[in-house]
Length: 294
Image: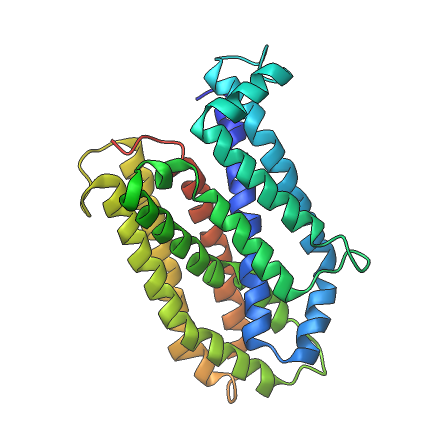
C-alpha cells in the first residue's frame, strides 16, 4: 500500500467514527435522557461535537485528492484543479464524493448557529445524511438497478444501527461520570432502557451485516483466504466481544447497581472495553472498504 492508501484509510476511519458518534450520541440523548439532563450533557460535549464536525469536513475534503493520487500513481498532478475536477466529474467515486462533501458541509454548518451549539434533533438528521452519503461509494455501490438500491439501503441500515449502538457508548461513559444532581435511580433507568433497546439494535447490526456480506460475497461463507476475509473475521470477533460485554452489562451489572457499590465501576470498565473494541472494528471497516473481497 502507498502513502496515499494509508492516508485514505485514516480519512475513512475519521469520517466513519465521527459520523457514527455524532448520530448515535444525539439519538441516545433524544430517546433516553430526560430533557434537563440531556441539555446539560449536550452543552458539556459542545466542543467535542464541533471538533467532530470539523474533522468530518476536513477528512472529506482530503478524500478526493487522495483518490486522485491513487488513480494517477503519484502526487505530482493529484492536487491540480483540472485533475480534481476530472476525478470528481468523470468517475463514480468522484460523483459520490460530491454528495459526501455536501452532507459534510451541511453537518458542519448545522453547528454554526447559536454560538456553535446545535441541537440533538438537528444533529441526528445531519449525521444521518452523512452516513447515507457513505453508501454511495465502496462495496455498497458495486451493484446497479434494484439490487444496488437494496444493497445501499441495507448498508445504511447497518450504519444507522451501528451508530445507535457504538456511537452512544462514549456518551454512556460520560453519563456515568455525572455528579449530583444526576441521581443513581435515573442513571439506572437510563442504563436499563439503553440495554433493553440494545437487544433489537444489536440484532439489526448483525442481520444487516450478514446481509452486506451476502450481497458483497454472494455467500455467507468466505470463498478465499484473502486479506479481506482475514480482516472481516477479525471484525466479526470484535463485534462478538462487544455483544458478549453488552449481555454481561444488561443481565449481570445493571440489575446489581441498586444494591452493589462495585457494579457501577465494573460497568464503566466494561463500557471502556466496548469503546476500544468499537474503535478497532471501525479501523477494520475502513480497511475493508478499500479491499477487493475476492
